[in-house]
Image (tube, each protein chain N blue to C red):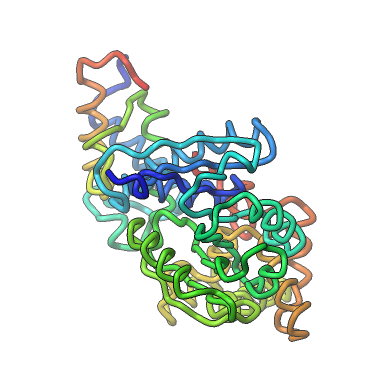
Length: 89
Length: 286
């Protein structure tokens, strides 16, 4: 499935976050350390990325460090999307 | 693994707290038998336990290992062989009493019965169980699988053996308990609930918005989320029930559920679990 370039992935993640937390986001800012989002929102973020980009985030990838910044979420999504995996749980 | 270590924990009630406690236990390798009244509720509960376990893994709050098994059942008898049982049904003294009374007759001597309550005195619930020395309270916070501290309530009749067994169980689940004596609302609810009630009164009177109240409590007083976000997480219906429990038992006006809270509950705006409370949640934890 082709869902666009890394730039467009990053843009879509940023737009989702800005809409939900009503704040402009810098792509390398740690959203959790800065208090912009909390642990309850973290899981919503995971589910959103899975649904929006058609990826399954499991195992070692399911850790908070992968979701701290828009940049890290973008690289996770791009890596999973490009991986030769067809069986999305 | 020894027989005792592999014996399941019984959890009665598959609501927000029951499923959160189940996720906590299986995430720490303790198998769970989860009981509720219908297969529909249990099917939904299994999905929520899976989602909560993922959330726990995401936050690094359960060990990196395979989860223990989750079994669900509609009959109380399914928990008869449990190492301990945690009652987590609706925060209503009559409902809790009925479930505890029925459950307590099923267990072998020496099986601790734990009531997960935010404020109903354990001594009061102890009148309905066959062995009140084996009953104690644990007030788990929501989400049970993320918050590592719990409030442990020892009634006048709770035995040393029961305390020791439950302390061991909490340790296996990575929880730290602070033991308090029995009283309506114990410590945390007695302090938090009137604050939330007053915060809702402030919003109802138009003094400040929910966002402003929470921002002030976070920014000025170091509260992690603010009282009204906390209220949405607790569930406004549960909060009204808990406040009513306190009000009925103490007569303190500060515990009387305020109008705005009652209005929101009547409108079905129960907080995060219904998608709307003091805040709008476009998506709930899924």
